[in-house]
Image (cartoon, rainbow, N blue to C red):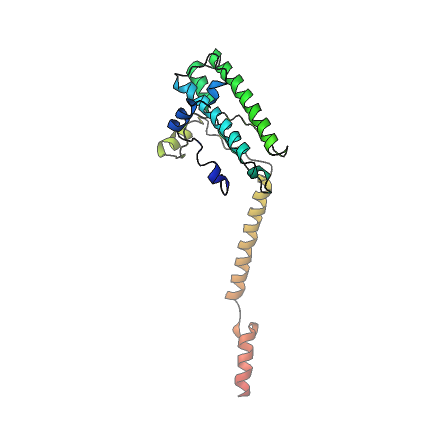
Length: 214
């Protein structure tokens, strides 16, 4: 959020402590949101609810500064919500807490979409993408000598690699090209070795004529 939006969103809660303090204010979503099986005393539940609080605060700030939505420059809001995933890890995806959190998230996203559509006069596109988590960290792939020796022993019959249909064509082109170049070098070398400089070379012929004229 750059440009004029910097001043508007500078008071937006971003750290965990700020989000926790924002949740326990009088104007937070806890006063109007049905928690059902979720708890206010659990850190995982508070993390999930704090992300919904950010959605509510963004729409609330835009409603107070509607000039940002009425200008001619496009706006992009990219938000990552990982609280539901943490709820699934804590309670399990078959638990009642996960089902309630999923329903709350769907309702909050629908409400956020409606508010953005109203603020931008229907000229808004809201897209939700569910990204699968990869538990394995990013690592650089390396290959050691031990791995190379192990990979060689995986093929006990020492079979060749499979080739495609273009292999025979490429092989014949390279083979006959090498044979042709080798024959050309032999013929040229033989002719140069047996060449008479006085009769076969135009350089010596022109030089001899010039000497005779002098």
